[in-house]
Image (cartoon, rainbow, N blue to C red; front, top):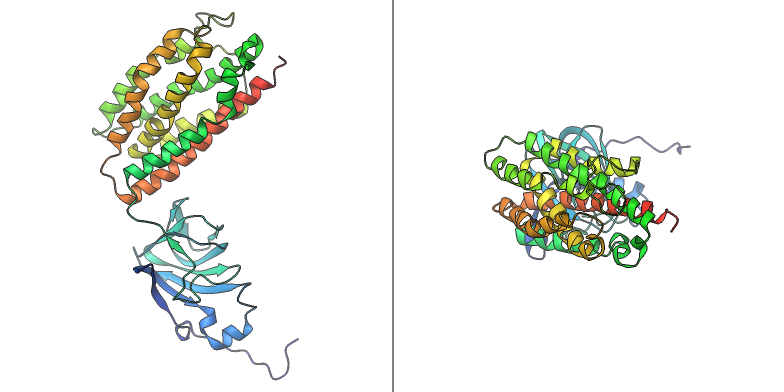
Length: 358
């Protein structure tokens, strides 16, 4: 219960000091408007210890940008007015009433919409800018380019090649005919889906800068599903590609994620998923798998991929040249999503294979 002498008081927002920028490593970084509650004496006295909670008013004018950054503490934004766009790892619209939770280390930023974006920024620990001369944030390097994107893609490819999916190719697991049949039937779901992926991309592209290149790629990939289904191991020799003993909802759902992206992404994003992720993964798979599986699957399937996949992967870099640094940062998020889904697909194929009694 309040003491008799306690009084209700109102603090005008304007009475809380504001900053609009900070300097870090000699560089000036624009913040929009930020007013830390601890910069007002009466509010400071009411707040718990500084190491447990920080609250600030934040605001961005129309089209004003708070560049992507990370910080070492969990943060939460509550938007009470206006709208805008969140940048970084999960770009998407935000608006009045939204609550955004940012775990430590997650890259994020914001752009104010037509009426600006207003909110409360809450940290569960020391405030990010309570000591403006020692900001607790790291701003992302705006000069992110194609070389950095490709280097990140190679790092993800290296991680992909360490998956159990590749290990079972050469450890004797697939010498068992039942496991081998399950492995190839499960992989057929992905191969069939890859054809759907390319047709979907072509059907949704009207940009003359991309459509002819996408079409040439489609022509060069057509029929690979039938080659993979042409098995010489007592499985489905000469069979139609839809023939498969595997009916797995998880595998089918993961595979369907890729054609869906062709419906919702723009052309440069589509190119990144197919040419940076799928084609580079394809190079690794066909190179590693051929010595172990070519006697069971029509060898032309491996030969044609080994002949054209490198060209198709290089095509991706050509299509992605001369983009804005922010586009490359957006593509980094997209290819990470694609690699995560591709790893989920190969993990599922591996699990189905190993579940078969050898």
